[in-house]
Amino acid sequence: MDVVVVGSSNTDLISYVPRMPVPGETLHGKRFETGFGGKGANQCVMAGKIGAKTAMVTKLGDDTFGRDTLENYKNNHVNVDHVSFSTTAATGVAPIFVDDQGQNSIVIVPGANNEMTSDDVAKAKDTIASAKVLLCQNEITPSATIAALAHARDNNVLSILNLAPAVKDAPSEFFTLPSILCVNESEAEILTGIKVSSKAEASKAGKALMNAHGAQSVLLTLGSMGSLFVSADDEVDVPCHPAKAVDTSGAGDCFIGAVAYYKANHPDLSWLQVLTLASEVAAISVTKSGTQSSYPSRGQLPAHLVPRSK
Image (cartoon, rainbow, N blue to C red; front, side, top):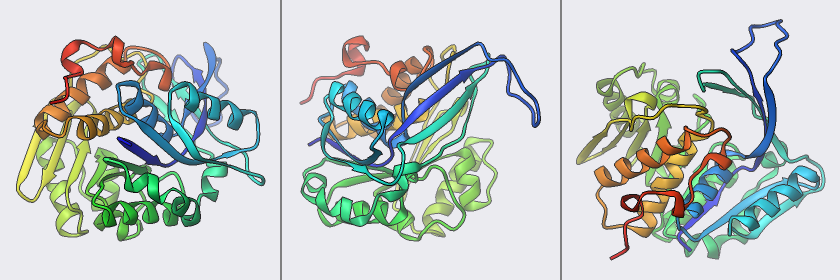
């Protein structure tokens, strides 16, 4: 297995609006769509779309959204051996507002994601051990995420924790267990207290996450500023690939899914190459509406974005 994801599955409920409503305001939207989402699901589907063999460990509600989500995984060739169903909670949902500038605001209602346990992870231990890359996020129970990261560490599997959404009181294992801690600028500020509005400040925050919290290495996704990888002996600065944004929903997940694909399938690539390629893939995604529906497949990418394995 190339990429295994232990994480969330949501149904996106997307309203396109001319601008964001203010408190107490009723605003007419332009159109409404549903889509498949959840940070875990997005990252898994993205990695698979460009060529990774993927597996998903997640929990759904026994409802229409859940059954449709399972079918979506199958349609995207994701291994679903460890997709389970709750009998007490609904499938997670994410109402999303997208304005005319392509910016978004999201509310997450976790539902069945909050019923994920370390027992669910234990059932998938052989799948995790077989992976080249494990992806986790902060949209399921901390106990399940910690169990997955610990199992990856014990089996020498490269792990990436996208600590989103970030919380000030995050468990210490969220920093010390993953091979790579991935956060955006606002998440970095929540975790470190350092306002990140420049690459210099991002570097400072990355080092603080390593020195004060024990992170092994840090990948900071910085929107229009690009990305920055910080480790004990390396710092890689990659600018944002230019694009005319139509909808930025899921762009960060697209980027991380692409990073996982390149690390799993092209381990010879340097971090500079990985982040540059992933940035271009994510830039393509924001030129289309939707989340997973905006992610390009392998056949839609320029040849230089799908290098041949050595």
